[in-house]
Image 1: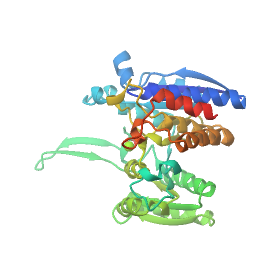
Image 2 (image 1 turned 90 degrees about the horizontal axis):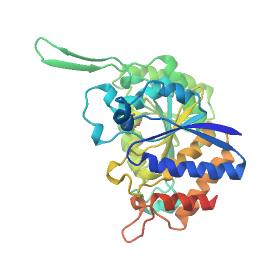
Image 3 (image 1 turned 120 degrees about the vertical axis):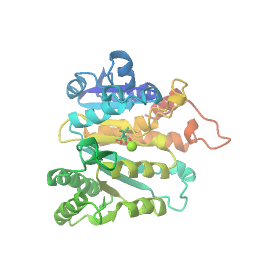
Length: 355
Ligand code: IPM
Ligand code: MG
C-alpha cells in the first residue's frame, strides 16, 4: 500500500525525533512492502518565526490531503509570552485538533519490562493503561471572557460545556478500546460538583448497558489522581473529559518512569489521525543528539495500528523497541547513574537493525 504522511516536525527536539521515526517507517516499508510519501508542514514556533503565525493558513487542508499526521513537538520558551494568539504555539495545537475533528486522544502509559526498575512504584509492575481523553470540547473550547465588575474588580471566566453527543462518541471509543484490551473501563468525572460531569455519568451509564462484557466503574477525578499513584495496575482504559485527561495523562506518564517512551494518538471519525510523542520540545537539549526518539517511533506504531489497520507492522516496531531496551541500550533520559547513554541517531539505528 501507499501512504501519504504529513510531518509536523515543529520545534526543539521535534525535527530530530521525527527524523528517526521516518527512518523506521521506511524500514517497515521495505520489510512489509509499503510506500510512504512525506509532506512537510510548518507549524508552531518555527512557523511564527517564518511567517508570523503558529498556524499558517492552509495547515489543516494540507493535513487533510494526507492519510495521517506525525507531529514532533511544538513550543518553547522563545514563544512563551505573547498575548497574541497567532504568536502562541499552543494555538496551533488546539486549532489543528479542532479542524481535523480529533476528539479522541489516546494516551497509553505502559511500563516497558526492561525499565521496571526505573518505576517509582516498584511493587506494581503490571502498569499498562490507556487514557482516552476528550480533546475538542469542555473548558478548553468553551466561551472565554474577561470583564470588569462593579465591586470585585476584573473577572475572568472559562465556560465548561459538554453535549450528550460529544460525551457519547468519546464514551464509545472508551468502551470499544476496553474491548480490545483488558475489558475494563473507568470513567473519570467530578459528578459530586459539576453538572457537565452529571450528564457525562448519565450518558456513560446508558452506554455501559450496551457493553455488558466490559467491567465499568465511575471514579471521581481526585480519587483517580490518588489511585494512579497508589495502584496504577488496577486501570485498563480510563475515559475522561479534556482537562481532567490533560492532567491525569501527565501523571500517568510519570509512573512509567520514562516520559520519553510514551506515544499518543488523536483521532476522529475520519482520516487523518494525528500521532505524537507526549513529551514536549525540550529546547534545552535540542540539536545535541540527546533526545529519546522512542516515543515518536512508538507513535508510528500507533499510527499503523489505529489509522492503517496494520497490527503486524505496529507489533514489529514495538518488539524492536523492547529488544533494544532488553539489551540494555539507553538514551540519557532513561539511563541510570553509571550507565552509558547513546544518542538519538544511534538509538534510531539500533531499533531499525532489529527490524
Ligand atoms: C497536551 C498539552 C496541551 C494541552 C497544551 C500545550 C495546549 O499540555 O497536549 O497535553 O493542554 O492539551
Ligand atoms: Mg498536557
